[in-house]
Image (tube, rainbow, N blue to C red):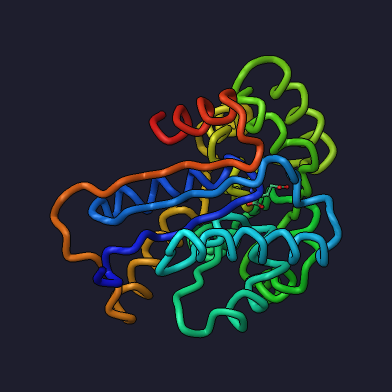
Length: 257
Ligand code: DGL
């Protein structure tokens, strides 16, 4: 079969990366997709980098065994820990990662106060420090690790008093003044964007890296001559290491909301 017809493989530590999958499908509806969520081993953000590297390599190998023509690491944490390892392993194919969308947030107004919500690992890794150094003169950047937040999304608890209490105590600890923008530096957090927006007020701009990652994937596929020429809508397969009916249902729900 023509390589262009092979699927794009996407993985995350759980269901969060479906927020990136949605952007990919919206931008390239003719492609086929296989999404692998590793909920059984979630969360990644509070593990050691070596453990996340091992898990990321296992997910990548699995997607390759399913015929993936390109890999999208739809997880900021796995990108910060393992993207270089994956690119070294698979130099012959596009391997696209995601990182906190700091640039558009910093450029959105003059010297903004920017809150970056992400996992402890993403904020601790060298990749984020480099990114922060690039923009620290143009903005006040407040990194806010959110251990425990992805678990709400994994449970399908996207709104309600539980998550509001959780977020409220984080915001109280990190914010003594309002912020201009929030960067959602974890793919799970895009699914709780409405509650974050509601709690921080309507004038706070919220950014995530999903659309940028989808655009970069399209650019890399085109560069490698791997974009499908099919006009028909492609297929979307969602798999999860938990293998339960509950997680399958949540995956389908998140793809469609
Ligand atoms: N979805 C992941 C990310 O984008 C992380 C969640 C986790 O496993 O801790 O960082």
